[in-house]
Amino acid sequence: MPLEHLPRWIQLAMFALACNAGMVNTLGLLMLLHQSISHMTGNVSLIAIHLWQHDFAQVLFIVAVIVSFVLGAFYSGYILGNARFSLNQRYGIPLVCVALCIGLCWLFTPYFPRYALLWACVAMGMQNAMVSHYQGAIIRTTHLSGVLTDLGLVLGYFFRGLAVEKRRVTLHLAILLGFISGGLLATMSYQYLHYHAFLLPALSSAVLSLIYWLHYWKQNSA
Image 1 (spheres, rainbow, N blue to C red):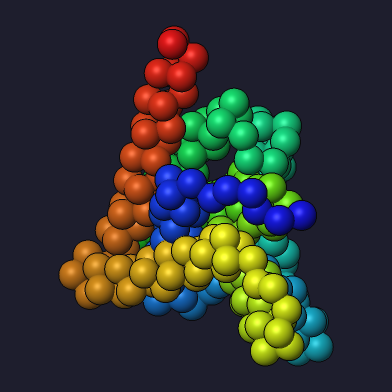
Image 2 (image 1 turned 120 degrees about the vertical axis):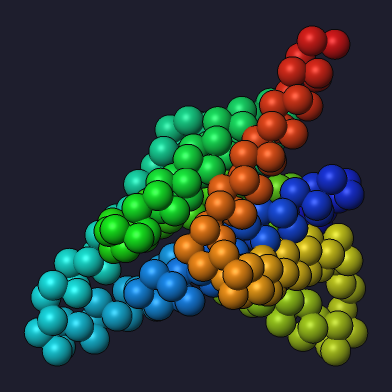
């Protein structure tokens, strides 16, 4: 299904969400046990590795990481009831929850880093499940496997001489650039703020929630 239109604000929203995930995941890799937070494929592979090495304590921890991500997606699904993008959805609620979960990660990091990481995983699961589809396009804002696959497909279509859907490419590029930008911002801020850098994605989520609620109330009071 082709994208009929792609407003600029949707591009900015996807960029901002991907930037948020890029910050959280990069901080997890830099600080919290060098553990991926926002995508689970590698974590499932680690389960197999640690099972073979009989490191069952690590297996249990990575299972907890994956379950935390799933729980975040569960909360989002329960709150919204639909993964298709619509301005009638109350995205402000899961965004506030994402901010709170990242805030709890920041709070517990100096004392219980493994426990802190689980809150970050809940946040990323919740964010990733907020919007899964927009006019037929599959959207994931916390990892890039699908984005890079779609961009590769588009390149293949282009060199084959087939029509390329530019709006879909623009959407995926916004997510890719957002994730990279978030990673760069997290890396730079970590040099000065250390674990306090988690406050940046927490604040970003809170600001996105506030912007959404202002728009929601304005639209529904008109």
